[in-house]
Length: 622
Image 1 (cartoon, rainbow, N blue to C red):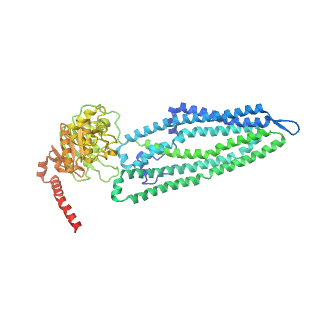
Image 2 (image 1 turned 90 degrees about the vertical axis):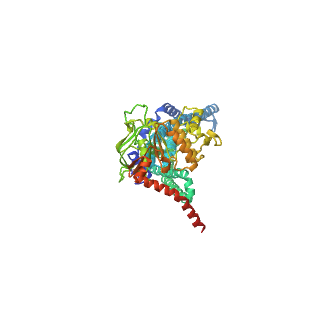
Image 3 (image 1 turned 180 degrees about the horizontal axis):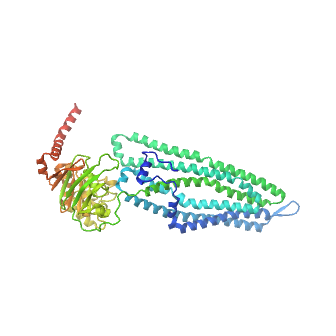
């Protein structure tokens, strides 16, 4: 029975997103991963068999040396059979050469197989993560996702590639040693068999204990990795708020939980090695007693007893290695369970089986009785029965108080979320009837805080038009008037933007994103607070680019700065998830309703801001 995750924990959230509890049996899903490298695995198995054979032939050489290499020479004397000794020495040397060669070849084949399997799994997991809906990333922590794609996949190598050949080698050595002991003298085998039952019981208990402990270790590792990723992402805020010490203490707490789980695992697993060693010494003592009795009775030779001691060590040695094998197995299975939990998480937004074929789009957008809530258990929806039509080629501005659903409309239009009731249509066709990549190709979005990827400005522009030449990309920047800013950068269009574009100012990033949208040439352009976080000079420059970009296409502009939308064809005021007012700027002001109140409030804030700052400075000086 699986132990449920603690309510409210990260694991419980991931299980809820996957719609199932984490499974404790993953072998049936791991084995298909090995199909592409089954030839490599078969070769490794063959090499392991030959390797075991080279090991087991050595005791035979020793027995022959003891029984036949020492010859009587006169009364009480002995002499060496030098020709036989040389042949036996050469044979032993050959077995060691074979062992080194076979072990090297097996490691090479196993390593190449591991790289292939793990890289295929990484690609599969990466593609799956890219396909997950935005709602998954709203709730899952980025660091835990990173842990799945990195540490957990690495943790499968000992389980999938190294483990099976080593386990096969251990089993072959045990079985072959037992058979050869029986062949030499059954009483010698019986002395060894006496320790098998307690050793098997200890092995079962060890496997059970380490399995649950390694699951806790993997969970705590994901916890501190998630915290590390969030710290790197938000380091500027931490420094600004002076929370570095508190954040460090939290990281130390998470490391403490991880360390405690590791130490518990060490204590839990520490008994197995001495336990197996005790049983091994007991088996060795029994064999010596039985062998001495057989030697006295003339039933076995001295060489056979020495050979048997080698076989006992070959039998018991692998059993002592089982602790390490089972520990790696437990760690690998814990990683596999988490990887498959991620892979079992289906995207909430899926294409229908039959989608609309790509066709030219005019750009008319209709919101028809749209109702939506981010959580199914939410008491009140964000959008409640909203009706709104945006005509093809029209510029519609959307304004309203914060938190009343303006940006949510953008998420619904682009199908990052799906409506719960009603529908959204593009040219009269429900957006759910389009394939997602086709829909988003027709709808361009420029956000307040867009993301640039590591690389040059040209690299980021090429995301919208992969086949475009540098000249085409630069012409697009000049068409929008962005060239006078971008060409003044240290290396012009070849300037590295840095991680998330942080080497550029916010205004420079916005210009790059506008050029990228221009290159994509969407039928519908959505501008969500595109100028709200830039200075006045950058805003004027960006506004000119926006006018050029919006020309001839449907534009939906969401803005807090009401002065930037006075030229819109119509303005929709959203309040409590519905359209409260709709009309032109002058008409809405004449109504003296919510829009007029927002407009006056906006002007008042702008006028009052310098006076408030001056008063604050005067108060501080006093």
